[in-house]
Image: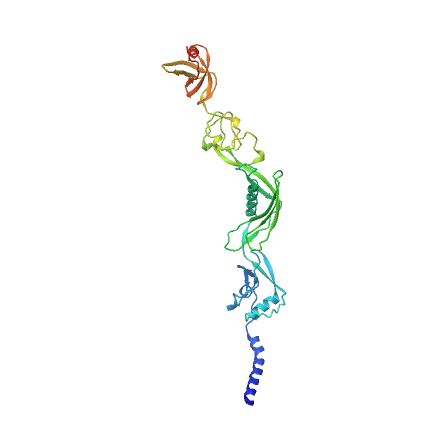
Length: 327
């Protein structure tokens, strides 16, 4: 029995003697010069080059995408030791800095998000075709979302003064613990208006290929400006129109079907009687328009509606008196 106890004591002493030597001989963990994390968790593999089978062991939560965080070196030592990994921290670091990788949410994306938020807030107060052009007082910092996630800016709060266009917006992303930026600036109302793409001469009939929709500051759009293509296409210009300039509705009219002083055939139809005469237009008129016409035989002036480029029809409830005007 005594010899057995002596053997056990000798093994314990040997183990105690060999333990420091074995530990010294074990490979030390090699710290990465730059720790970049892609997921929600910081692992030993994110921090050490030779973490081996312990690479997936968690150390702490990762910062938000695009952000940095400091992890206490003592915590890393304990996490490594628990996994059987040796990191003596010879450099005596107090903290290790970890960078979270991410996809950038650019200033342009933030600008679009603020513009959309303002448009939604003014949906009942502004015309449906108005949108907003946003300018920031300072270029905002880039935000980030996790790698593999669609970049998106989220407006968490908005104050907007429709009178001045000034706004204050809190912009962030859907990411957990994402940074929130407070952005200030001004928003301008923008509308698309039809403009000639080339000069249009007086009296020309405007076709679809002659105009295009162009964005314009709504504050610069004068009252009476044509706002849709339908107001322009098929119309004739009363005056020359310049390329790249808004068009006033007052500068448009229906194309002239009968020109002033042109010869026309005058017709009056009633049951059992058709009267015709030759006349001269006393004014320009569009198809379907009512103009004054001089009967060249009777020298009487009548009103007639244009039904063809050289024909007008008299409209009257007094056929007897009208017959006299045609003869």
